[in-house]
Length: 90
Image (cartoon, rainbow, N blue to C red; front, side, top):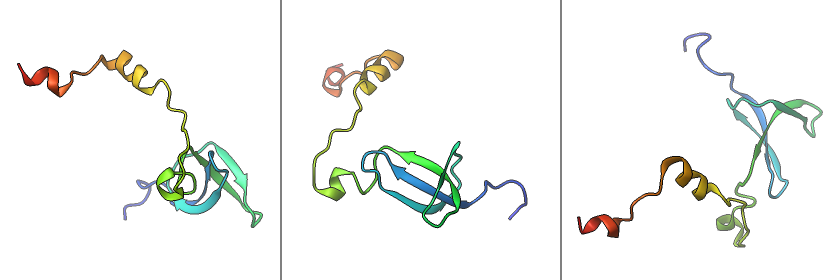
C-alpha cells in the first residue's frame, strides 16, 4: 500500500442509540466523541440509530423509528416525484 493515502484503520466503539448496546470493531470512520471501554482503553465512539440489536427484522418486534419529516424535507428540497401511473398514459 502507498503510505499516507489510506485512512487509519483502528478499533472503534459503535453504540446503538435505540437499544443502548455497544461493541468494539475495527473501522476507518471519523468520530469526534470518545468513550472509555470495559478494558480501560479509550476508543472513538460512533453512534448509530439502529443496528441488529434493535432492528425489527432481527428482533422480531416492531419499533417506531423517528423518521417523521424525511419525505417532506426531500419533497421540499427536490420537488414531488411523479407516480408511474401518472406518467404511464403520456
